[in-house]
Image (tube, rainbow over all chains, first blue to last red; front, side):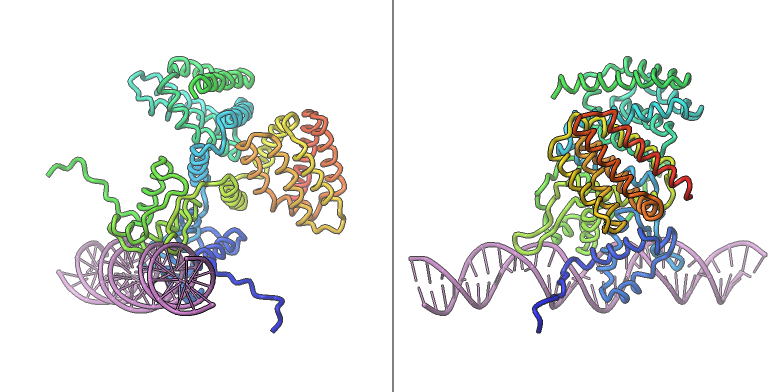
Length: 239
Length: 239
DNA sequence: AATGTTAATTTGTCTTACAAATTAAAAACA
DNA sequence: TGTTTTTAATTTGTAAGACAAATTAACATT
């Protein structure tokens, strides 16, 4: 027996191995959106494992929104066409965790948000449509309701900024920017509770909308810079 | 019996519900990193479900790198401290899928990359350390080896740009930028195979490093703009 | 012809059991 | 007594089989 060429003993999780194989098939394009996988029983046969193991593997993929399942004769497991929303959600969740664990400090977060939002602003000024403006006006109207809870106010704030991201016309940039903003929301909420002057914020949003109406990129950017500066001040005073 | 206030019938997956509950406990901070969850048997008891169901729920969380498991008396399931690398990996994977499914078009991707990389560049010029410069020089040396395969050349290309992202000093921005760049790699690879002039790219990298050495932000940005312009040209000619 | 019923298929869940890994304590030995 | 080996206990990993629930299609009934 030769000592060389030992087989790499893979005693990794079976379910993980199977999930990896299936994922690779999806990413590489062998399996396309809405394709139907074999039934769980058949997969169990093909991989020579039990059905619970197959199910654990499928759960891993389902957790990443790569597949969906349905019962019944026409049911089965199907490849999902991943949506930007799904991705945004999981990215936001993960970023929130990282923020909560101080993987990023406040300076980094604020700086990243400022730079991203300014870029979105520059793109949004020429690209915004009337629909975008209307959505922003609606949020502004909500924010002016003084009976609104702090949480609802912040949610509307986030919605308005998300619209700004959408208005950039660049879905990738908008997606990234929005995730950063939403991950910041818990912190923003806290600040809003304690310091933020709603009237001031509403006025800033009013001016932001007006600048976008007139396609005034510089004007819009100035307001975003102002808002971030305010946030930074409040946070600096706080923590 | 009143017709109002029907209870929302929740016949969602048990495993998903359990995973959601546990995830919320993690995100909300009730469960901290390295905390140990109850054993699977105990969880099954507490949730009044069977162990396989618990295991499926745990697989969902494991797929998101939120937990890890170990066997044995001191083993069990523990809360993971999520790392930026893990997150970057899953974001890259997801973005790659979205790109492959044409959720973003090429213009959006290139524009996003250009804007993100320019911001990183501006930050990197003053913030780069000697270690960053050295890493970039090493990658440049690799790229000048003409016996390198196209894939390896591109991998080194990506590594150099990742270093640029790191040099920005903003981990959040760097993380986002890198994910966008890496998701683009398959496309970039293709272009590199067919069009890209390695010598030109190497020279550009050389100039980029020199600009960063001298902390010349405008110079570095100019080169990044140049590279994106080249990419855009090649892609425009291609697709 | 419209409608209700039944059967078949597929995922969802439960139960029980054993395997594998790992640690801690107990036992054997020097 | 100190060291090593063995054994037992604990916990996750995997398996097999069974039944439940949902859904569709074919069938039967009025």
